Figure 1 (cartoon, rainbow, N blue to C red):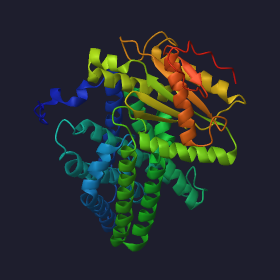
Figure 2: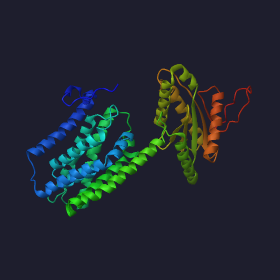
Figure 3: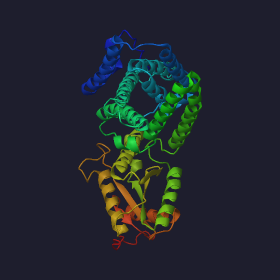
Figure 4: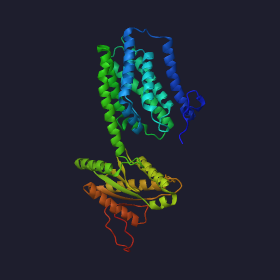
Length: 441
């Protein structure tokens, strides 16, 4: 049942009060600082000549027109993004920081973000709709970024602290100030609310930071065009913004299609394609790589005893362990059912087989809980059998490596499960006796 919406006058029921006190304090402090700066600016209003009012109206209207044109695309982007979301409104807010007094730049931010909420966020029905307080906080961080950028720009004028800087360097310094303030405020709250979130991966693992910088550069060019050519120049900024929105949406949807829904890992097809490319690169660079196949032991019994929902939790927990234990450039995928597959494209040691064995044993120990004494899957203990193969010693291509690793996996199963086998293991007939331990190396 969908809860009834909270009315604006029902202050005590606002969702913001449900967040942890420490996080609430940080959020309210940022918002209070943003409001204080705006109030201080309003109490000492700048001179409003016709040119300033035209710029204010141009940036506000252009920001709203931008939202109207891309509302549908932005709604899909926002609700399919897995990382920090860049909404591209910085084109207008950064331009306002360069062209307008800070208090008027804050007016542009409030207008653009209010319109963005009404046209993009509010139409999404609960419970998928994001809380209003998140958008209020985002707007507050941008207000502070606008004030910081305007302050830095003022410090680069002749006679000021950085007055000797060339104009281009002054603009770059202003742009970086805006980026650092906004990004730190947003990711700081993310880190407080979810300490396990990989902040560095959000910053440097994708294109979000580059996208934000590209948007700010377009904002700087828009500001220069408005100052030189008048209001109609703003129209030239809209087509590139629309193209950026659509390009990013296509990339996000493609990335989502590559992921397994239950674990968030690469699906079979995506892993195989990326793994094949990684092996080709390893062959060109003449370095060792390795492949592991992991199979959860007696997973059907877990499903039968505890239900498929618990089985899905086990799969997700196993995927989380693999992501935590492996390097960012290692490829981790779900092969289907209870099988996972890992490609290590860069082995660091001379003895690739022994290095692979150590990695596999570490994964086995983490999944079963023997490495740290606590199974990651909760109360029910899960074990995993692992088979591995080394490139190019065990095979010169993806198909050959998978066959060798699969034979090693079945050898691990025959050896009693919850164990690791590396390298070729010929099929043995039933009753042939225990399988001998393979020779090292």
